[in-house]
Length: 515
Image (cartoon, rainbow, N blue to C red; front, side, top):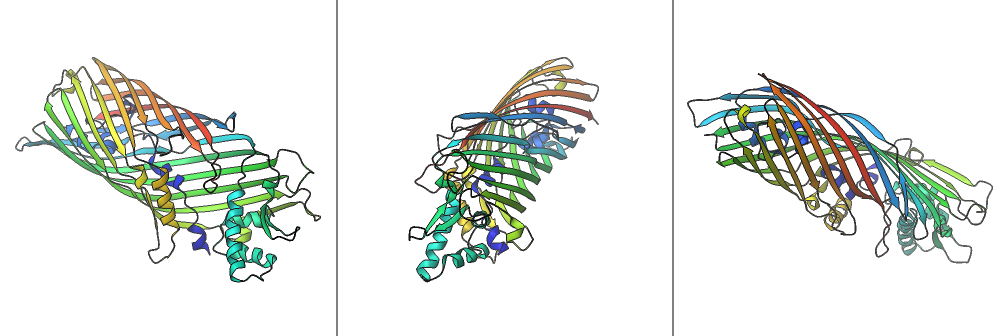
């Protein structure tokens, strides 16, 4: 039964959460919008285009602590509400690069690096509420039970309704949330008029006050190693192996209340609460090259293979329903997931394959020179394409027979599309002081043009370099738009969703030493 429940745990939204992110980096890298596909000579190249490590001829050690503060607004059914603020410490690109030269080879220098970086930040809270006279979160649950009920009746028409409900509460073919709705009488069978009809009591209210609060935390931290080589200071090639570590937690509370008040029908309110965690590890490759057709110009190409994740999820949930004027002395019913699963919350194991990433880049260096101290600045840009629709879930147990993942993977193809990301930045050098500005745009992964989503970063910073030591300070302002679906109903009915605006400030400080 737990295996069957596990097959109904993953959703298309889980795939996009793992791929639609704006990675962190060093303070210098973030100050120029994260554009590092062709610039090189920076630890962040390990996570963008490893060929950039080939510019190193000596070594350095880098440390990048950071602090972020975020707030969001959710607009839902014409009402806008702010959420709680989220503040958190983070770790940007941190690591070591070892560079060395070989005067007897065309491969003039080589470099090896190991580093760690936060590639996704999940710390945020979303809250929205509104009045809905169109649908209820119980609607898809009632539809699921209706299909189950119809199958039983078609096979055995004389089966009593109570027996069908009891069987559903222990059936692996019924989702956990639908079981909780049955247990608390949010979903029931109405035979008062002689017809046996599956009902949702919430839909009897016609108009509902709805609110949803979702608090998430954690992130993806990637450990990477990379190697690069430099041929004649013209061609740089490199590769890297990344091991992302996933730690994600979501606590959500979805509430529906009869907007007409209590005492007038068989529904007053229902509350669904859920705690969901996902942990695991993945592996990926990054390959790239940088070519200098002339001293001032650098052109870059990089490919990031999909990350193969092995993930383990845990889920616990509860539901409370007040059936108001329905017959019987008890009006409020409660149930926890452990009550329906023998005292044990479900654990899910599965694999996830993330999208491909393809990147082309260009940089123009002002007064290019072999001694970087003589350079006066640069302008650099990246164009990246991410194949979001290629994300794919796989059963962790090859012997398991279940077509649920096929349905989820098809939904991913239907709902998402490939998207372009753009990063642009520049730096001016004033002897030992540098000033930087940057911009980044991460395009919408949604195929539906009505869903307005994007991530946009505006950044600026200062740097100091002298006698083998460097210090960089950067501020990044993220202005993001996304959507959140509290639940999904079956086509051709339309889904309701919240437009979410996220405002994140991020301060990064990088301290490094040459050796």
